[in-house]
Amino acid sequence: MTIKAVRGVHDILPSEAVKWQHVETVARQAFEVYGYEEIRLPIFERTEVFARGIGETTDIVQKEMYTFEDRSGESLTLRPEATASLLRAYIEHGLFVNPKPVRLYTIGPMFRHERPQAGRYRQFHQLNLEAIGEVHPALDAEVIGVLMELFRSLGLADRLTLAINSIGDAACRPAYREKLVVYLRRYAAELCEECRERTERNPLRVLDCKNPRCRPVLDGAPSARDSLCADCAQHFLDVQDYLKAMRISFEINPRLVRGLDYYVRTTFELTTTELGAQNAVAGGGRYDGLIELLGGPRDPAIGFAVGIERVVQLLPESYGDAWEHRRPFAVLIPIGDEALKRLLPIAQALRVATPKPVPVELGYGGRKLRNELDRANKLGVAWAVIVGERELAGGQAVLRDMKSGSQQQVSLRVLVQKLIALSSEVGHD
Ligand SMILES: [Zn+2]
Ligand SMILES: [Zn+2]
Image (cartoon, protein in one colour):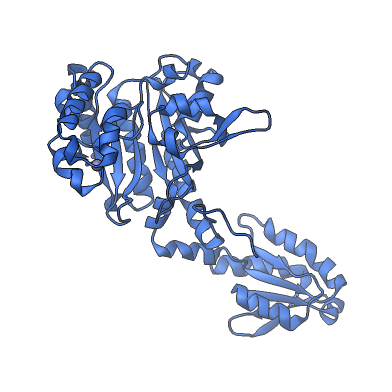
């Protein structure tokens, strides 16, 4: 029996990988022009990084982490999200001595043991961006601005909706939480089981429930916005003013709370109606207490995560064309070992040609010409170059136009220049 991939994970095949590369390239550009620098993090950490950093009471920590003991008996966890890891590194390497805000981003896989369903994976991938060390609302607007710029560059901004909210801070959130719990307990009988359980554990998350049965109660729930202290209210107004100045349109969604315990004040989410129920493409928020909680300085921070799988799903099919263009421009077909040796340096010269390399494949010299031409056909290359014993003796190559089948003789000495010229003619890239 053949061995298959583990349930809930997926391979990214070459025709898809082109889209991934595109998203990552555009993201790096969008992030770096704002001064964000890449940090690469390990994919597993000590379990306590996430237990403390995400919150013991969250669904992620309680039900979804891939936690295991390694051979020395230490409890390790495959990262379910990037922020806690990134802050662990920020503290460990003393990055907080740098001028604030410290701007960082990271790209990579995350792991959660979720029920497999369409669009949900147990290994999924994120772009994460974090701005650390500044409470000013202009930074909230900047981070949201970077996110919108990313999607503008990808040509997807028009298909997404930006929602923002403020969930208060340590000064005003406990009172709101209390008010919410009192309300939810009063209507407990009308709520689903999960909501009743969350009321005691993580009441803000109840507002997130997608169960239509709970909707009427939740629609009437007290809103965080009405409970903001003066500082939080001003912060939220300022963020909105800066977004307007940046001509970024948004709506305010009072039920936007984010799943993790450490968020305060600004939260935001980008959604689409095109992917069914799993409609959040990106989300983020401010987490001013988290760094201290992890043993670092009292640095505030704000950041976001983008689900790469969902972005790739939104990209138009035409991105597949980029894959076609990446196929080799020509196949070099030596017949016999001497011809192979003559073509090896020619293939190399084409692959390092400046200003633009010419992608070519080189045969082994051992296959029949008919098979090699068949292969060139299937690859969809524009040209085949054939060098057999007779051509070699005459210092020539046969250049075959794969589309028309017409052939011409070219001197081996000018073959490199000839192929470079042909490839620049068609603007191959
Ligand atoms: Zn519910
Ligand atoms: Zn407040």
